[in-house]
Length: 123
Image 1: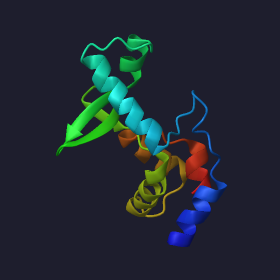
Image 2 (image 1 turned 135 degrees about the vertical axis):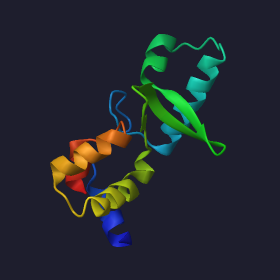
Image 3 (image 1 turned 180 degrees about the vertical axis):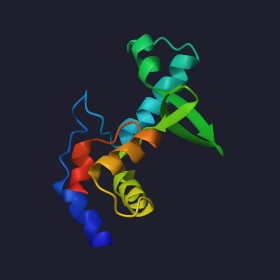
Image 4 (image 1 turned 30 degrees about the horizontal axis):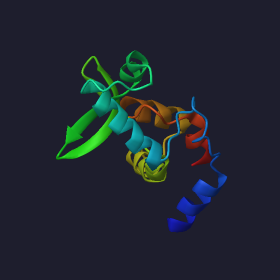
């Protein structure tokens, strides 16, 4: 599995530097958590607060902070850093008994906000 994981990250296009990309590395993920927390506390940041809080929220589970999409209809959708992507794709692929791309995308979309077709195809 480690060889597959290494190969996955080698062929995955790196879009973490693109501001509009859904893919984010752990550094950006943690920075967004802190921005959301500070914005909710009333910090005067240069970012557009309304935009930030429309796209991101923080959920604390067992003392661990998770970046999520603001809750809609009681549905929690997590953002995940690039470093966790392979493991989540692997677990999902196993849980749907090796279902195809569309089934995998539909399953992932129920729980995660930032996993694209490209990433699933590369997996």
